[in-house]
Length: 216
Image 1: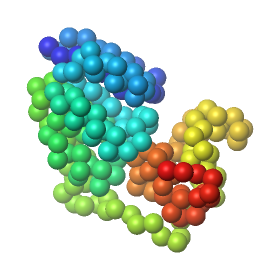
Image 2: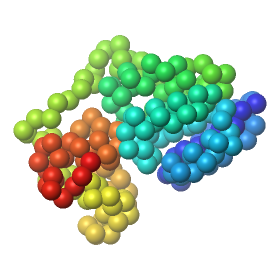
Image 3: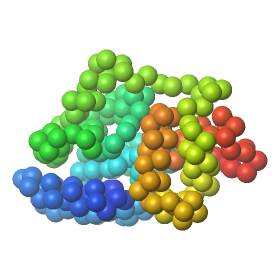
């Protein structure tokens, strides 16, 4: 029997995962977590937990940040449960057999199977990610002089780089949080990055934001 830590800051996603986990056997208890600080606190209490993590939207600054936590708590197992992850990130993270990957568009049976196998410390890779790795359909994108972002996405990227939340950006642009969230996901997908830290580094290299104002 193991504890599940739901490390996802989207209420609707956590609620869905909570329901799914309640249907899976061999789970002792389920804890909900919204940020890195709370995650570290829970890991000190449950060092053998299985963590279901939305890496793309969680407040981890880089893949190294995640790896450091995993090295600190080596008895944990992790399920990276996200909408978009770059191929470079995936190939690196699956080298650690304690990491499984499930996309949010995966079917219910696949999600349940991934959780069940992770409870037994067996790595699980969803079929869509397997296909991506076999076909090489998502190569790493180099920064080019011609940005793939629209003007609106560039403006939103500037606000993301300044540390503003989706809610704050929505208020500033007189838009809905859902619209800003969609823009954020599209920006990450186009840039082949997984979080705001990596997107900001791109923006600096591409000259979208001023290096004198932002420090990475």
